Figure 1 (cartoon, rainbow, N blue to C red):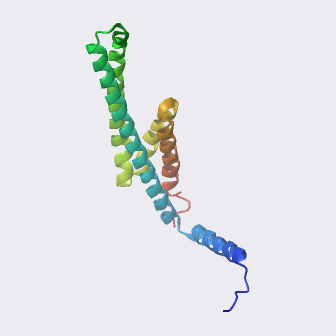
Figure 2 (cartoon, rainbow, N blue to C red):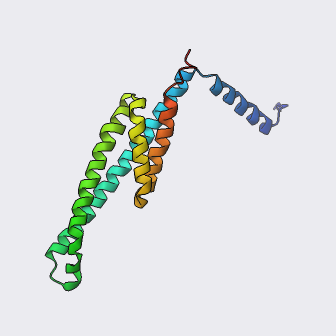
Figure 3 (cartoon, rainbow, N blue to C red):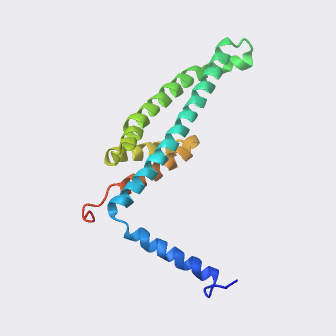
Length: 158
């Protein structure tokens, strides 16, 4: 069996350098399209997590609200203050789902990356500020960065 004259580590470095050169040689439109596809995926995952979080919040608010309304024990009747908070959580998560779907998810799926950038940034900042949804906010912020790169620079378009 013939042995290669190039050690495996050096071969891996040469292959990596070749792939890096090829990536940089791609036209701007292809790189922009790739960034757009990644942004669509990030927005889809963030929206799915947001939907799951909203369902969990609404169901937990409904359970606690119904338990507090039907409670006869003094310890459970103190949960009655949760009724307005449960209603607010339900309305707030519903509105955020509508905003995320209409102004971030749909334009990104249709390829209107410029139109989806500002709402995605606003959603990212809003969800990072809400402590229990940091992961969703970070995903929206990463998607915003990819949406920014998805629009080709007018100077580079050939």
